[in-house]
Length: 391
Image (cartoon, rainbow, N blue to C red; front, top):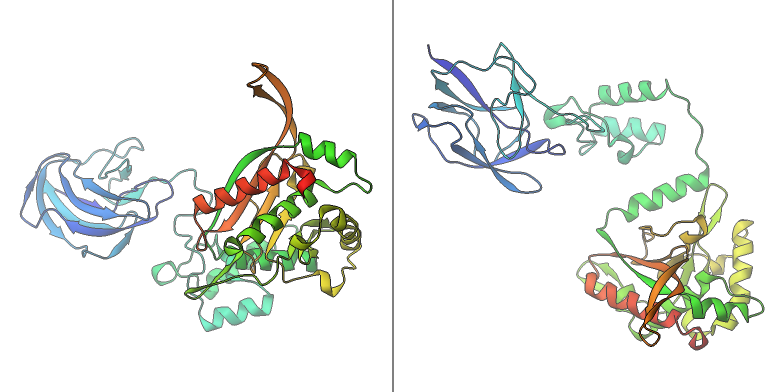
């Protein structure tokens, strides 16, 4: 007895919801064997091949080369004398590259997708109709708010009906209003994340810095040492702090560095102007003043906006590593982690000695520079922090 077996787009990984048919390796009428490669498909991660689970004869090929199909879509059919497998979650029907597709008694194909945080079809609001935009504007929502919504429209588009159902589900949960500062931070991060952001990191010795700080009055904050070191490094080469606009890099006209201060339900970023032209001692009073004003939310206009980079001391929260995101108008954010005692090999004493060490991170716009340039800049900052007398 001859059976018809559908050729379907297999599940090619837990996070893969669709793939593009690159080319068919067979044609209608071809005889195929079990495990034979019949087509090449391309996902966002790799080019893979799909194989047959049984031998038979290619009946039809309905999928077009260059077209994209969702997991489970029927791409063609083959005929075989081998009876279809009984429904079972652990029996592969047709797949490749680790795919697992199960069949039902009616020969319908269902992709086995488990453990995903959102439905496979949740492409988000990649297209917004004028009607949907108007409704979202009415409620003060953004496209990012719909990232987990599975659309029922053409090509997975989110329809107004999908949106209203999503809003209705939200109303069933406990809701609290977000503060104006939280909304402002969210908006800035949405705009920042439209760029490719990367992070590099390395440890820095803090012993000399802490000894220097203990001798000062008033005492500079650890973040101020990092701020001053970054300002000096950028004064030597300001290109890493440039912004890519079109096909040109806009270099900064002044080394104005901001630093993050936690305020109620958000973060404020006071700015120290021309930080490269003032010594650490000269900056300490202004830095401490701006910290106090930020916490009171009374920053003067000349101390906000226009900075080329930000310093964030996430070590104050006990964190040793983080990947902060630069502000939309910046390319760089330098992070300082919590310090801890670690063993360090002393070549002269031929033994390990305890030293205070912390991680430095540099998150940057990958369009402007690559890892090598970021590593050199971070290395220069780390070196300057180990000679605080020069700051």
